[in-house]
Length: 164
Image (tube, rainbow, N blue to C red; front, side, top):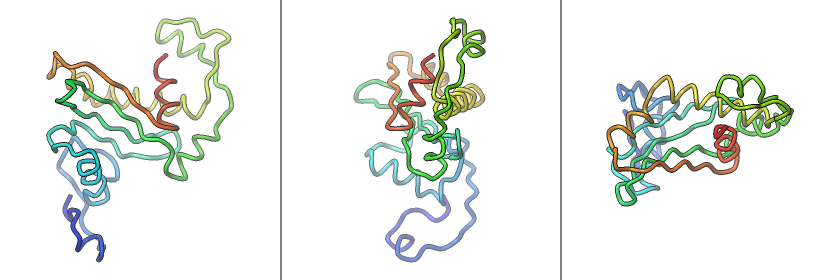
């Protein structure tokens, strides 16, 4: 990002142009702070953060695609409840039929239901992965790597809903 994460920007936050030419980072990166936080917290190299979608809304969950060279694994991780929008997704508990999705993906969803907020997040992530093709690209570029999918809280529910 244009501001970077430094002691000066933490103590004296200021507005800046937050436009990024990095196509591997989508959504509100808050002048690069979210990216910097992920890299610092996980202790990974920038080149191992393959894709980040920080978009967040009701039914829209932030997620990352990372390369773990130590474990030879591509990691898809879905963030849990953090924002007000996430809390709304959490309480969208009306059961949604899986019949239509079953027809689309080749399973019998008759009489099967899912938490509507988590299913909305799963549909969004599936569509976003398909649109940007980053997970497929990561697996093709690292053919000897496995795939690990991780979610916490709401992210775990979204992950389970996506496993249909």
